[in-house]
Length: 298
Image (cartoon, rainbow, N blue to C red):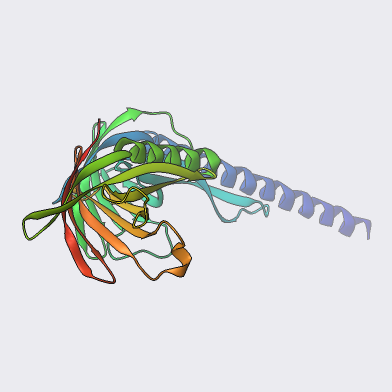
């Protein structure tokens, strides 16, 4: 009986040693793999800024490449295994746009960088894929949507320091940039209403930036010079599209007085180039109301 106990103890000791060796081997392999990936990704992580050139215009954009830990199974000790993965965050700086998170793959042998949008639902014109190459400290390639190529990307490394995007700071930065973009066009624009080549009256459109919490909004007011009491004045809400060339400003107006009790609505649509707002407007009651060329008052 004693011999059997001694033999069992010896076998357990041998199994324990083998188990420890397996753990040590697996840990060493995991550490080696992580180090290889960190060395590989260190060649591309950082902030890149530059231009996206589309058929309509050029946009200032930023691409941030960073690493995250991705859980993938467990090791022989039952501990979670983590693998280093590359991720990206892409955003328009001018004109301002929100950031999108991307899964990323860097193929060192060919210098290829492939990014795919992580958003669950994408519109046909939203960025789906970025196919690029890393050339020294530059990233060049194509930006694509489901409907086709959006434009050509040309970025340069501006900082190798990076952090994971997200949280309130990221949101605050976006709304601050949006606010500055709106403030750049805020002001009073003055001009004439023209129908069949004849001036019918003078009017002004004033634009200002208001905030709901930290979210900026562009609003305005339409006033006719021959209506000092403001009886036909309109309160305006704006949709500004600076990514188009030229930039498009669409204003939708409701009566200043008793807006909730009136079906009346006016829509101004035109291009905004420098200090000039040019276009036409219509109402849901009379249809076409006139053309205009307004200039920003100094």
